[in-house]
Image (cartoon, one colour):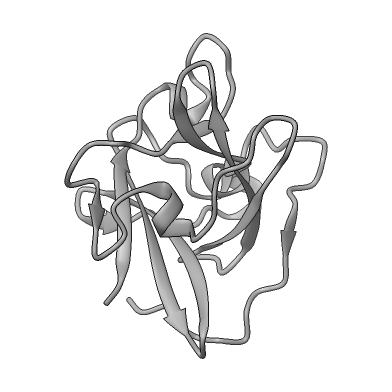
Length: 154
């Protein structure tokens, strides 16, 4: 069984709010998670980190195959579990508020992979050409090589 969670992207998720921070609050609502995992700790198989104790989880962009080292963290003040450092995925796909992000947990060859996709009007957003990507940060995104396993099904 594939476990997944989804969320409708808001201005604040995309860094378009007052703080310009790009992070993704993992929703707590019933029905957000599908499959056997019903909360972030079960889904990722580990407790989220804290601001002074970072925990990273690789997320693979379903379209590009790029792997982003995403920080999985619990914000004590707001009591939210968040994913940080998805900006590379956002820059490559250009989501807008109202688009849906889906994170799937897939078991392949005895290992779990977390695959992220961004959907608009029922279709996966295309990848922009390099010259179309704006607001690239000066620091290169932290990502690693594409996996040798092919689980990108269209």
